[in-house]
Length: 137
Image (cartoon, rainbow, N blue to C red; front, side, top):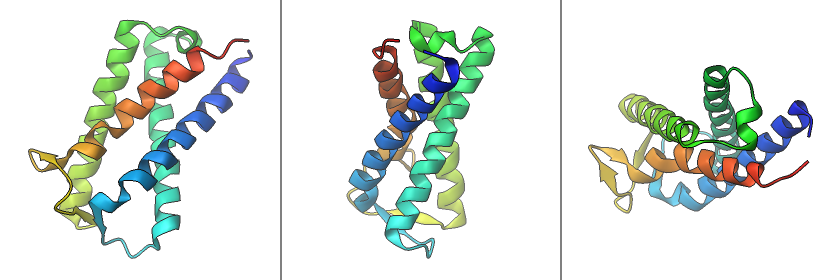
């Protein structure tokens, strides 16, 4: 499969996973953004997709190509997880401190950060890699 086609399919997989995650977990937030619920969830999903693709771009730079996506190794998975956690924590800390959102009582937290958003980018990134690595040319 050509790299551009693989990239587009990967982006679509990430978007679908991100939409599912955002819609499934939105009840754990009190939204203070002023944006209507469904457009907000779609924007968040598109943003998540771009972030995960950015994480994959960083791993591609480390590997000096995009071929790693076909068969990721343990280090690639570890980088996706670590970068996913780091970016998620940063996003949550910034937006909580700016008052853009807060958590409902149903959101489990670790050090004040919701567990759901903390694992989202890492988990959807890993799942998307597993899916795309099983798509053959």
